[in-house]
Image (cartoon, rainbow, N blue to C red; front, side, top):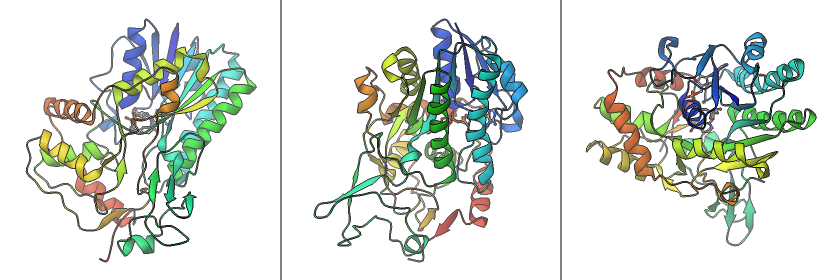
Length: 371
Ligand SMILES: NC(=O)c1ccc[n+]([C@@H]2O[C@H](COP(=O)([O-])OP(=O)(O)OC[C@H]3O[C@@H](n4cnc5c(N)ncnc54)[C@H](O)[C@@H]3O)[C@@H](O)[C@H]2O)c1
């Protein structure tokens, strides 16, 4: 059996590659070795020599035609990610890249057994909230005016009181950033064209994935790398808003196992699943875990900065995938300590943080509350 992993040189893709090799698959990777993740476009040292690497773009039809040749299953991980304002690139890489994959399969009459598409928790947008008196709401993104006043929480539109966050279930979608909309289009393209060509498609909506191999150089996003790299460089990390945002984290090995689970389960076909822990951890507690693990007493900087596009709270329920037999087994402590170990083994880590922050402030992606 032969598998293709697009984006297989990246953080999650490379773990999927290793899982497939362990299962006896011949593995091919299609990856453009994009920056800033792959500094200087260099092939990462962690990449298995047993996998074939095609350096190419998912937007390049010739490269895609070569990559799908003879493959039975495809894991589509390559994506444009983050908060930057190159809006069209999110749709070129994520939406058009996914459509092109199906176009190439149709043109080649390639007999593909399954396609697993990496989606994201981002498709839930702000998620859902409840007010004890007035019921459930799906709020729109918080207004910049409110964030500038340090009004971080979603409040009930009827009574104005603070609301509680509801764990995201697969049925409620409300994407509202360029990244989130493009990830949701990948799902729709996948399900639609998968049915048209009789190829089972599964979409996995990852929560925040952590573990070794996450690049040290993409300082535009990524909570663990930014806290850990800054602490290692002796800098106090910045925490946005008031640090009380609830998130859920999942170990990259559990994510690779989720991919293997849906590969082998016919019950997963043409469905989307959350791949998260369902356990909410606020950013301040997460920071304490990282600082504790690194033996650092540095206090974070909390000066009212916020990132436009961040949601206030989002935690995904993993019950859908658990019903298929998947479960996660690694804790936040495991994720953090694995990453710190990986960081400590790095020969050299350059400081890219200041430059990324400067660019995000100039573009008003990072702003500051007036409180
Ligand atoms: N890391 C997370 O927390 C997280 C959360 C939700 C969803 N996801 C999704 O998981 C997938 C993998 O993310 P990751 O964290 O491993 O990111 P990553 O940046 O480490 O890996 C992505 C890989 O895709 C490659 N790539 C990017 N653009 C490409 C293009 N045009 N053509 C070919 N290759 C290209 C990059 O070179 C990189 O190797 C993505 O689809 C992402 O949207 C990740």
